[in-house]
Amino acid sequence: MSAILQVELGKRSYPIHFGSHVAAILRRDIANLKAESRPVAVVTDENIKRCQGAYIAGLGPDLPTMTLPPGEKTKSFAHLEAICEFLAQTKLDRNSCLLAIGGGVVGDLTGYSAASFLRGIDYCQVPTTLLAMVDSSVGGKTGINLAAGKNLAGAFHQPRAVYVDTSLLATLPPREFAAGMAEVIKTALLADLSLFDQLQSSGQLNPASPQLPEIIRRCCEIKAAIVAEDEEERASQGGRALLNLGHTFAHAIEAVTAYGSYQHGEAVGLGLILAARLSQKLGHLEEKDFLAVKEAVGAYGLPVRLSSPLSALELCEAMKRDKKVRGGEVRFVILRSLGKAETANGIPEQLWRELWIEVGAENH
Ligand code: GLY
Image 1 (cartoon, rainbow, N blue to C red):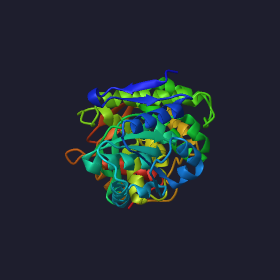
Image 2 (cartoon, helix red, strand yellow; image 1 turned 120 degrees about the vertical axis):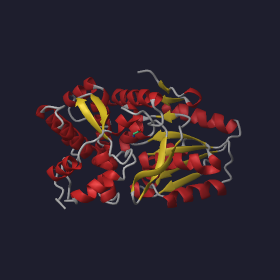
Image 3 (cartoon, rainbow, N blue to C red; image 1 turned 90 degrees about the vertical axis):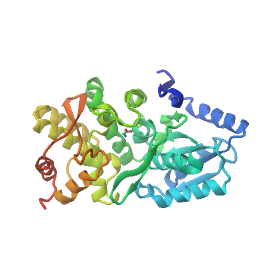
Image 4 (cartoon, rainbow, N blue to C red; image 1 turned 60 degrees about the horizontal axis):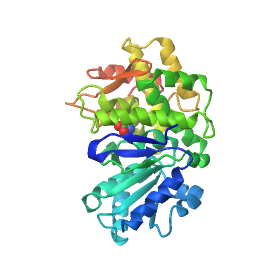
């Protein structure tokens, strides 16, 4: 496996590092920054600090560290403000570099803090969850949630490098590993049928599975290629929006449950089932394809129905507030076939409402 994958974005290009020497490369890069008198600070969360405290301490002496409460609710204006105040008190200057050591919440929030502090400083991603390794640490989407919806405030701000150290997955709770698998399944479904076949035939993967590093790399490769083509999701058809397969549904579940009941990946798993069912109803997938998606998601114990009834009306209203809405219309990502996604507009609301009811929402 090649140790570096380049995200090709002209002047903003950066490497994703893989393999067993990633920690050594990260230590070297931190030492180099400090040798150039560039201050480095760490942002992480309490769970990572508890499980990987020695890893963080081993990255270098005297790294100022901000430790956040874990969980999606941390992706808020209050914590953005707290990080920026911390950076100011630590006297970070415009040459500084932040290290986001954590999952998607830490990565998105640290990236947005880096985009905002002093009008923009550098940051690097050190993903510690499967979800962050295969999706959120790559591509420069940063941001926070609003009460009105997920990721509704943020900025595109590419990291300077991403360090994918799969040894960090050893302490990942099984529920979080499963949530990350939803993004792996998503990536396979939207772009790579052979990866989807591999996921179906390889049984249930776990952090020690020998195939996992290559699968993570493949997901990063797919994402890097899509981001290189459409960095800021502006393509009128397809493009980066395809990475949102299942997410219009998932973000609605997260918003309606106030980011408290479902992990992001759990909502994405159910979102994939809904996107596959929608694709079937539109005549693109056969029943067996829909069932294959449901089985792939269910194999990791991810929800295949809503765990408690939610209002179909509220879920539909939340979908209309999604940032993928264009010209007042909800834009969906559907499957033309397994391994091939496309964007679709003009899908009648009655159809999404029926989908919600099929997975346990109440018809009000
Ligand atoms: N997670 C979707 C994207 O980065 O575009």
